[in-house]
Length: 230
Image (cartoon, rainbow, N blue to C red; front, top):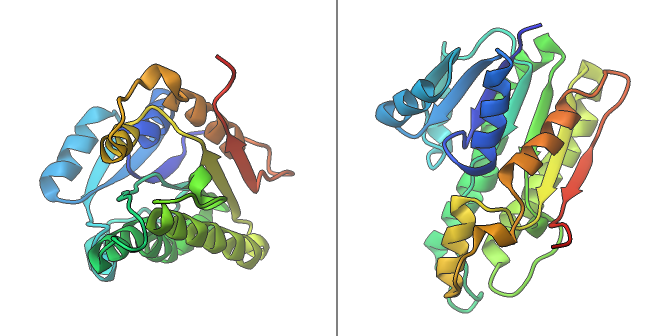
């Protein structure tokens, strides 16, 4: 049966890999882009896709941007977007904290709130693409890890709140994955980047889809994906 998925971060990395898999099986995609031009670009990537302009850096504006644009039933909301800025606590600016908490956490909470009526109608699922940083914080990762620890708290609370409505909530915690964000992390760390050293986004997509496609008698609340032996 054809399903409908609302996806952020579908333009690259893990979000792109998941969106491509869902499109290949004929599902409908609603893809969020930060501007009309970006939303149109995303829609052109896949069949059965529509783009909606909604800037995750402005979560207070999401309700207006999505008004009358969301389907009546949504089988899955996939939170794949994220930003990262590394630095020690002694150096990170208020802007660095605000940007990461806003995009990675607050926008995810607001988008979830707005989509929940349609997800409840479908007895659907919310999938959060988190990070290993959502479980352990390392030096120079304080702001990003804080946003991802918060995302874990959001998912855990939501899972308990929405169980009675038939909504499943899953968090995927990928380790370092070969994505444009990983290339940016290496640039910030001042290190050479070799994508072959990290998890392929397709492997994370396989894990995510296994959780989404699980029969309704079961739930994967949390799953970690780590680099395998080389």
